[in-house]
Image (cartoon, rainbow, N blue to C red; front, side, top):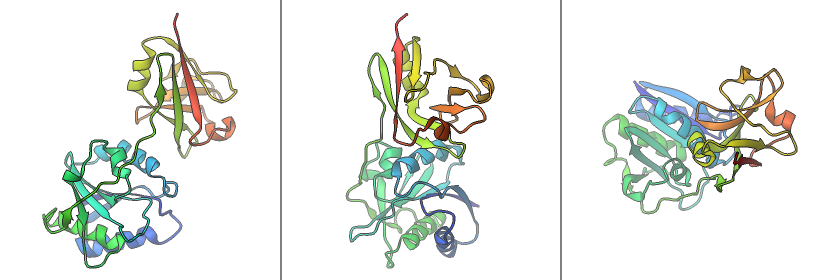
Amino acid sequence: MQLITLTTDLGKDDYFVALLKAEVLSFAGMDVTFIDVSHSVDSQDIQQAAFFLKTTYHKFPKGTIHISCVYSYYSSSYEIIAFERDGYYFMGPNNGLFSLLFPDLTEDSVYKVEHDKHEVNILIAHAVACIRNNLFPDEMGSKLKQLNTRLALQPVTTNANIRATIIHIDHFENLILNVSREVFERVRKGRRFEVFYKQHEPISKISEHYGDVPVGDVLCLFNSANLLEISINMGKASSLLSLQKNETVQIYFYEE
């Protein structure tokens, strides 16, 4: 049984995801299990897609194929690429998404998928079939000439503060920042801190669970992705705090 994950901005209300799955099944056979990571990635938002993939890909068994169809633009130079990394396979448009996932990724390990029919779904299905039949990468295509790259949105750090960015708002309207536990603790150095979000009262402690504060209170914790999150116990932080994706949050550290 071949596991295949799908991360797309194709939405859940149209037939686009079904067409992609149908092509893969037609090429690769029926012994395939699809896992839908998300089809609700914001349109063309490869930063968000990279966040979803980075959080989930390594939780699956080795040999899983991770397909990303986000920002699937068309042009004369359109390319679908595929590569193997740490025992997993990845494929999707050559639009910079995978460089956000693996900053050290280079053309040396990436292949351009080639087929007589230059259509997104068919190219992806062809790549999956090659992997399934142990024909990767020889029968799948050729070495990629140029990998498109993007820079990940990083927090701005000084000795005294971190300027963070809200990179994702989840289904519960929790606010996920681009600050990992490692970065936070490295800058903090054991010092007292305050998290400022707009004109609200700052948060001055890290909680372990949502229930650590009374219902309706604001808290900070490190989520399952080890990223700093601003939440409201039993509430919707984004709506109630009037905070949206790409807004900044300031974290200040104080000497005792």
